[in-house]
Length: 119
Image 1 (tube, rainbow, N blue to C red):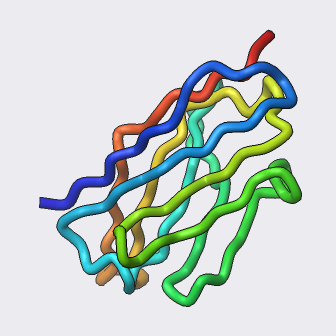
Image 2 (cartoon, rainbow, N blue to C red):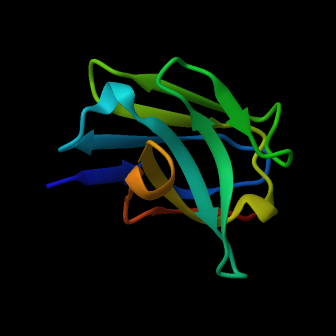
């Protein structure tokens, strides 16, 4: 059974920092592209950042320079370091594991962790 378990969310003041973690089980972690997505008040799930099995990263324009994504294949874990947080970063952050493309792709989601940026 595949599980992605996020942690590290919470309430933080504008300008503050948080680090999210996602631990994966039930998958061959090292071959998956891992990522973070967020669902805000509009209920649309948007890309935040991804990291491939080779360590290539991609970020939404809104978080470039503020967020960092990393992975530890030995621990089946990815991290999202979030700095200079803004109220508009408030959302539920979901971990994603993706392998392959098209009809043969595998795609898994975690339940999410709430991040609230407010004074």
